[in-house]
Image 1: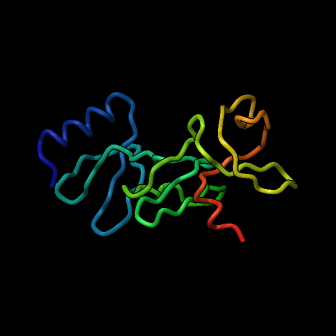
Image 2 (image 1 turned 30 degrees about the horizontal axis):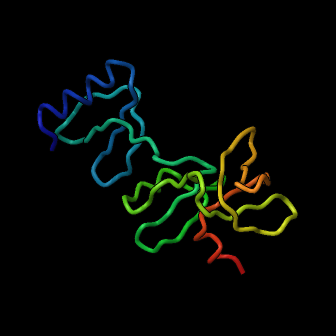
Length: 137
């Protein structure tokens, strides 16, 4: 059961045009467009937004395994605190490739116009964390 302060925060979020979710008994959370605010038999919360999007590279801090979110993955389920979004930083060694080419390890410079540029002046369509190279066979 939520505290009065938590209940008011959820209801205020809804009154301000935000989305709330409802959970009845052992069911899953679902969007409620007309909540009845029956806090005795139902639970309400502000809709949880996924932390990650399709195309993001994630690093699993527990297993140090990188992976990229692709179409069809259940992004809502990726709320684990052991996951963090990876973005390349200048001079970081990364894996680069373009369609039909080999993977290469180079230092990242910048991304621009949908291309990833390396410190040696090369440009690629894709970049991944260096740990990604360990998954290639």
